[in-house]
Length: 182
Image 1 (tube, rainbow, N blue to C red):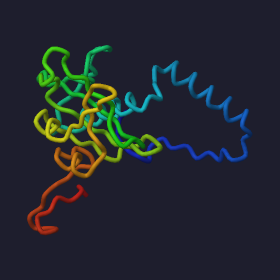
Image 2 (cartoon, helix red, strand yellow):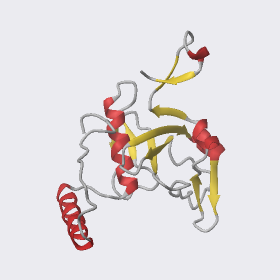
Image 3 (cartoon, rainbow, N blue to C red):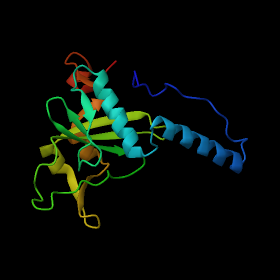
């Protein structure tokens, strides 16, 4: 991934003329090729890859490396040792769960959480970074799962720092309000 570009690598296909069996066969071929390449169609893993790639491309952000498989609540680690949890939203109204420490429910589990919002074509729409304190101020408790989550709400997503699309404040333009980067 050399550039995060929502229109990159789009293939125009008209699948309306393909019958159901042909569509299933196409899906099987795509799945097979994705497995061969080590890719996953899991929304969470796609969001993680997009976030890590975005951080590598931006000199103002730390370089992230994927956390080892099976690491609880951590998906990436910066060179400075900061732990990142990455949660992806596509159509869902809330993020995946973040399980508290079984001994100390309020123990700090990570330094930052990235909320990655993707569209139906898995292109980045937004990336919001919350530090631990911001996460604690917007998190909600899922009684059924016994875990925390962040809802897809203006309140929750406006608390953190918007990483993508990049926001800049220009005091001479737009009355000093935050505006998307040109």
